Length: 146
Image 1 (cartoon, rainbow, N blue to C red):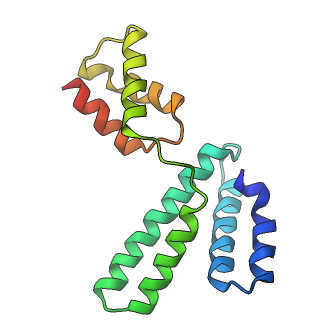
Image 2: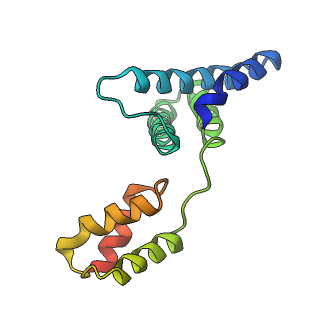
C-alpha cells in the first residue's frame, strides 16, 4: 500500500530537492488522510487508494485543460507534472481482454445475459478485477448484453 510508504517517499523527495514530486506526494498524503478521517470511511486499502489516485488524476486533467485553454502554460505544466507523478503509483491498467474474460466467467456461472442482469455482471467483474476502471467495465458489459 502506498499510504504506508508515503512518508518515506516524501523524505526522499526532500533529500533530492525535488519540489514538484514533494508537493505532489504531500497532496496524495492529504487525500488519503482526508479519506481516513472522513465520516463513514471504510478502511483504506489498495483498491480505495487506486480510486483516490484516479480521482486526483481526473481533477488535475480538468485543471490542465482549463489552464491550457486560458493560455496559462506554467499552471498547465504544473498540473501535467502532477498527473505524471500520480500515475507512477497506479497499478497496470486492467485490459479489455481481462474484462471480457471476467464477463465470460460470469456467464459460465449461469447468469443470464440480459440487460436486467447488467448490475450483477458489473459487480461480479469489479469483485474479480477491483482496480478495473468502472466506466470501461460498464461499457464492455453493455456492449456484450446488447
